[in-house]
Structures are given as structure tokens and as C-alpha cells.
Image (cartoon, rainbow over all chains, first blue to last red):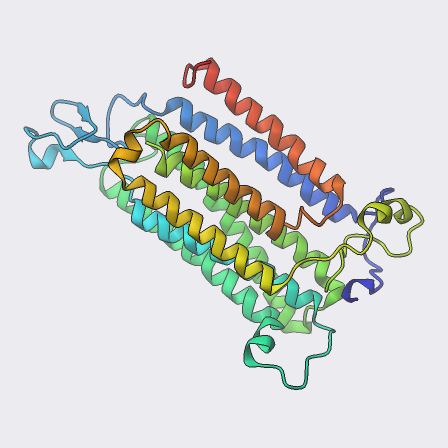
Length: 235
Length: 117
């Protein structure tokens, strides 16, 4: 029902599909190849760093020894533990997954804005119709994810890992930095939708614009699903 | 239920498109929360597996983790990105480059001896 509203500003291709939606899917396809190249680079360089700190291994700086287990005879100030913090990253992964759920609910709220609310609607049913609520939730969770990433990057630098330190540092910061930049763009994009929602309200006629932003946001999420497994969990 | 709003209702060309995607509907909250719970449970399973040393040392660790990650990836794409419900052209626009990307990644892994035949 919501989508039988005339969309005067939409441009349709010869397939009858909106050109903006065709464009975002084409863009997402090209982004798949960008992130595949970054992930490939990380995986190719994995295990080839000649100096630490390292993702899953212990490193003794004084002897430049690398081991899967704690190195017993290394001075404490020269011993570097595996640098990846799985518990923290697991929480940030969960936050990003939840943001995708909030995003689909924001889109559903925009699509259903004109549908009549049942007279005895519960607070939850009313909340499901609030695009502002779900856009805020998505923005906050996206910003939280970025906060986790800033914390991770800062702690890595304090532990001696910079983008110039070794192959792991170069490929890791490039890959996760690119992803973080995409999340930042997504948060700004969602923030602009929120501003429009406050200014004049988002309704079914805006559903395509919200859908396009949502597709971008979910893509950022699926890229992180791959990164989390390939970079953080697989040793 | 909401319809696929990317399609023009009065377009002559839509007649053929509609033949494939007539009355495309997006799911709503009852589906979305189940998908969210499913994704959470798989993520918990992945992290749990990471902390079992005997499982990490086994040959099954990497394939199972990749499988779980693939299931999560597909679930988000099919349900949250609505590719399960949308026009088949969108599926082609996504899966085509994705297959090229995966083939490139695998080719590079073979080329740099990260995996062997």
C-alpha cells in the first residue's frame, strides 16, 4: 500500500526499476571487490611480519622470538602478548549486528507511516512506527562501533603497533581503517536522514531514499562479518 | 505490508518486471527479530569456538568458522538487504561482483601458497 504512492522525483530504467537503486547495488558490487582486495592483501601478508607485535602470537622484542605460547625467558618489558582483543571486538560486532536490525525497523517504520494505527495499539506497536527512534538507535550503535574501533586503534598504538611497524600493522590498519571510514560515512548519512525526519517527517514517498541508505549500512555490516571471522577469529 | 518501492507502478516496462516480482513484500518485525536472534547465536557460537583450544587445533576449525560466517553473510543479504524479495537484477548486480571478488581472493591465496590444491 505504502509504495503505491506516486514518486515524481524517481528515475526509472528500461527495466522499470529505479535508477538510484540499480546504482546502489552496482556500487555495492564494486565495493565487494574493493574489500576483497584489502582482505586478500591482509591474508597474503599474514604470518610474514619479521617483527611484532602480532595478532595471535607472543613476541619477545629482545630476541625477536615469535611463539604461539607465552615465552618464558623473555624480560617482561620486552614481551608482547597477542594484540587482538577478541572480547572487545565481539561486543562491537554484536553492536553492529544490532544496528542492522534497527535499520530495517527504521525502513519498515518509514514504509508504514501512512498505515492507520490500531486504536488499542501497544507502546511497542507505536515504537515500531517511529522512524526517528530506529534511526537514532542505528546512529548511536554505529557511533558506538566507531568508539570501539578508536579504543582498539589507540590501545594498539600504545602497545607498539602502528601502521608503519610491520606488515601486520600496515595491512590491518588499512583494512579496518577503510571499513571504519565506511561506517563513518554511514553514520553521517543516517544523521542526514534523521535531520530530514525532524524537519518534515519521512513517509512512504521517502522509502526509496531510506532503503538506499539501509542497503549501504547492511553492506558495511556484512563486510564486518567477513573481517571479524577472517582477521580476528582465524589464527 | 510494504511493496517494493523501487518499481514504478505505471511504467509500461514494469509489466514484464512485475511478472517476476508482482507484489513484492518486505518482511516486518516478526521476521526481523528472529533473523537478529539467529545472527547473534551464530556470533556467540563463533566466539565460543575460538576459546576451545582442542577445536582451534583441529582441521575443522577454519572450515566451520568460514561456514558460520558465510551463513551470517547470506542471512543479512537475503533478509535485511531484502535480496530474497527484490528483483532478480539486483541479485545479479550483487552476486556477480561478489563471485569475481571471491574468485580473485582464492586465486591470490593459491598464487601466494596460502592454500594448496
